[in-house]
Amino acid sequence: MSELKKVGIQGVGYYLPERVIDNNYFVDELGLDTSDEWIQQRTGIKERRYARPDEYTSDLSTAAAKNAMENAGVKPEEIDFLVIGNCTPDYQFPTTSNIVHKNLGLKPNCGVIDTPSACSSFLYALTLGSSLVKCGEAKKVIVVGAEKLSSITDFNDRGTCVLFGDAAGAVVLTEHTEDTHEVLAHTYGNQLNIDALYRPISGCREMPTHEGIDAGRQFTFMKGREIYSFAVRKFYEETLNVVKKAGLTMEDVSYIIPHQVNLRIISSAADRLKFPIDKIYMNLEKTGNTSGASIPTALGEANEKGWFKKGDVIALVAFGGGLTWGGGLIRW
Image 1 (cartoon, rainbow, N blue to C red):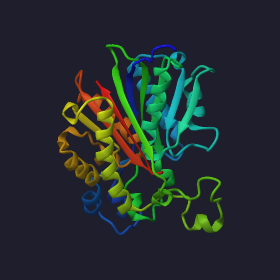
Image 2 (cartoon, one colour):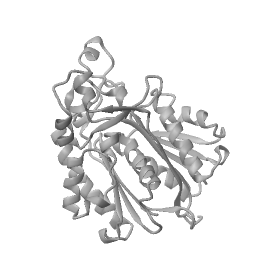
Image 3 (cartoon, helix red, strand yellow):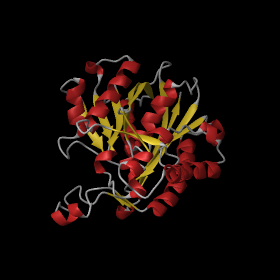
Image 4 (cartoon, rainbow, N blue to C red):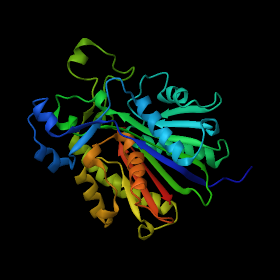
């Protein structure tokens, strides 16, 4: 049996749609009983991005992947596998990764797969992509987190519609060298709780009917209070777990990039961890909650802004529908 390889991130990239939606949109355009002040106080969100009607998750994924490949300096023919984390696919089949494979011009024997694990989907995709490199099955893997949440949002529900936005982020994985950022550890888990956060009409369990569509069951349903307590707990637990798995302590952690869920949740978890809030990268103020796209988008932005220096240890943590959770640790 060949020795397992260390995994490195060779390039990072992201994409945000052009259309900016500020909080006043929900009052002025949709006539909802809310306000900019109410939304900011409860979520920390000022604005988010919406994709065009003719711009799909595959398009967002393609743009982010191209950006990451350019950052890595790799060509389409070098990619051996493509993994896309998302819960808003263009179709149930073909998968979003099928479509992006064509968009990027990848070679025919490049494998593709989606990981539909909602807000945890990028970290699940990162675990899968890293495993392929680690065992030598693939030399270079693109891992994407992408969502068009505006397509599954109920704009009559003021409790959820103000939260979500559209985005995509990506990384290129390869064997770790001095020129890459090492992937140190992964954690993951699941605890079935379907109706805490789900989309009822989205599979074979509940088929589309006139009654169901009229009731908005094709959109996202969420029990906010239940998700809040779960998210704070998992942020705390999974950050500690992934750091411990790598043989490190919280004193070794330079930064945390969490799923961009809600400012209150992130602040509460930071307090439990006794971790400085200014060492937690957040972009939710301008992007909202972009589910599986939020961590790679934030990673790409932070890298672009020069947040990290060589040797920094960055913890990634996510939690979401399923209910699922995941962690990741990177040495820059």
